[in-house]
Image (cartoon, rainbow, N blue to C red; front, top):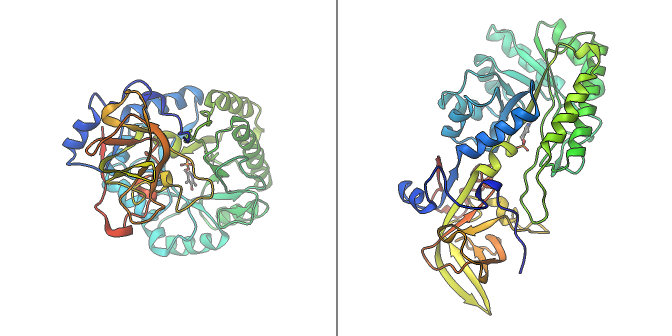
Length: 404
Ligand SMILES: *Cc1c(COP(=O)(O)O)cnc(C)c1O
């Protein structure tokens, strides 16, 4: 038997989505596979954030989940959005959520991306000096004054994070020692300088690592500001808050992070006194709010092992499969959705319907007995689920999505 990750707290006792059973939702949505996103869970996370980080602006990083109804919902809950492409800007506008402050990060912005961003008055988080040269030219052509912040490639990374994005040679951000000169140039060349952005990593469950990162970020922002001699209107501290996916993972202690950040900001250098601080989060806000529902279409025993073959798979939920053959694959939290709470009685391996052994959704876990027609729930599917999966692979039917 192999272990699986912990269920999100909202679903440890009962599996309902705004009073709907999983079966009801699957029927109402036209079938499975289905991603369900639950507003109540997102609201609970936002309330936790507000109480731990009073006075800090909260931005939603769209790339975690760009589902239109979710963006529309978010527009009344968060203080702004962070884009990583012009396509995300279109989705935000289509969802009617385009009137919030928006920042646009990500390397390789094209002229068309810049033009779209300028028309929407976004703040560009510049990833290089060259990007400023291009943006300035396009802004002059379009007769607008560009709003720009500089993304800093810091001399440190987020320790223990799933994806380290600082302290290295990097396509992201401008090396910290070159930032003051670029900021001077932006100001001298008529740009509307909005501040600094530091994003040093993702999926960290360590409060200490995040606390250290935020402390170092505030200190670095103060150094850069002092060298430029101008107060940045805004400093985006990044995020990187993780969620528990696997056995043994403990939730991030955001109360501790919030208390430490308050202390850091209470003692900040005078040049940052009038700066507004922002935290941008994707996964932590929406990851635990999503459940992937997939139906058992075959049950078979092979050489003593029981396989539940479902109508879903890695084409919708790549991360649960172990990302195309990850060296150390671990199980996401999984349940039999229509027999939730029933006693676990057999060891099964849950697979998708793709013709590859990599299409593994849960390996040798213990579940209540499930038959053909039963529903399997895979938790922690709200962030980097459908949007981060190879939906074209094997030309299988699209997954449905619903926000409840
Ligand atoms: C991906 C990304 C985020 C969101 O990361 P999460 O781990 O989902 O919180 C935030 N900011 C930037 C710049 C990103 O690239």
